[in-house]
Length: 206
Image (tube, rainbow, N blue to C red; front, top):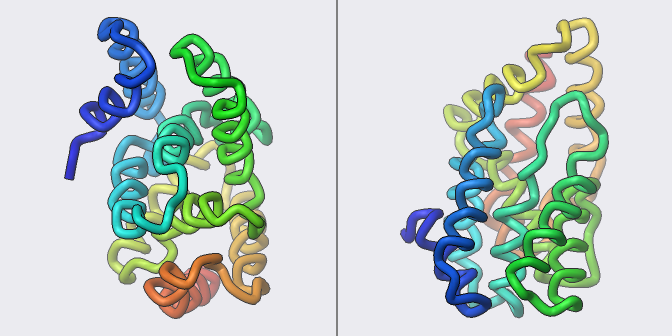
């Protein structure tokens, strides 16, 4: 699969011939996702999302927009903040305006990023594929999932168990209360059953 940098350069190239500017945008993404304390919300997370989305590329109407949304959806990430998605969307809007994207396209990408805050099912199927790719880790085998929960705990290491565990339980129970964790048939078939098993197993550990 194409590496992230090449993918980003290819994504930006239709909008500008200024390679130095594209590389500066990439450098910002690379630096942000490599920040200290990012044990899960890092470049590996982006690579995993693209690997998932490549499998359903023919089902996605606007793949470039979804690709920009992937690159920017966690560009701002602070475990203590409740406004990461909003700030990430604003960063994307600013950068993509500088890149020369049309206003309606920027608005669409911003909406896709904001959708990752609550993960509600959307009337727009492209958004549902984005959300499912974002949550696909939940349905991986237990070895991968257990590594994921360790990394999430590290990201929230500022909080003691007394605060972390009730918050994590609330998030996990919310997933189990949903009729379906995944919104598209493809991801449902791939990951729904295993995700519910993983979440139930994690709850028993908390």
